[in-house]
Image (cartoon, rainbow, N blue to C red):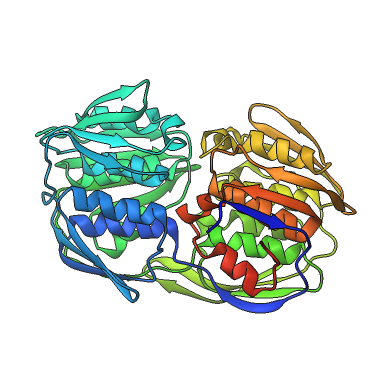
Length: 441
């Protein structure tokens, strides 16, 4: 794939049915959980992306074998104590914040020092959010100002903890739960609601996890240590990947799309609820429960009139990875859209709030931005006819793919750099666009 893409015209009307690749969050979690199982685990529809291969290479470095082909991926787990900890083993998480943060939990009992690294973008991100609870468990951590590279050494006697999670971060919860699997006693988490894939996977495996609500908090407890057998899993389609095609359809003329077999876990479908409030034509059909995760087909039609939104803050964690797309829709709505308490966007692969502000200003949309709030003055009559160059976004895959959707729906001539960044999460993104009729050089 070339590192630069050129788009000079909007996409024509389309009426299609598509499948998107397997969910990235579930793919990575399956790999980590399968590595701790006793025996063989098999996954179907596992996402084939750079982040997922980083996870597979990580467990390989720790002594767990796997085989992957076109049909499935097999992991040969050796139980909770099955990792082989060679001194100064280097783990490279690449661009994956999910992998880098969750692996701390599985290294809670490492006998030797493990060195965790990442790419240039990941190395800029703060890891204090997982360092703090892991040190409470007894993990020894040496970091570069709480950034990568980080040196990690486990403990022979991990101790259960009680932890108040205040960021609404599924990565923090998951990291703690993975450490709790290897820790005798009961670990307890009080958490602002966020993605619950790990909790659902624990329940599917019949592990001793308990969850309930207390006021507006999620209360989670886990009693370690319990081995579990290898398991089979079919990874549903990724809602984050689907979102690009949802917005492409909404902002294109006379178009329809059906996206088949997508994970519609309530903790991930904030974008659908937000867009519905904005009067977008979206519906879910054929909804079913699969191993605790809900899967459905997403039906979308072009929407001529879109309303602005004063986004409820409780939707933030449910749509954190889709906000760039939501902002683009707001740019085409009539009126002022408002978002508050979204400072977490500044802690992604790039500062996505800063990127969004610059991006929308570049295409002629007025905005107001603070450290954790955003106002967008939409223009439903927006028509672009200039040349727009997109670069310097720290190879953030979502920023890159957003640019494709803007180019194909708003017009103008676009030069999009670093398109290889898409490989971290959605390698066939461009080919799917071309199948719908997009002209991309």
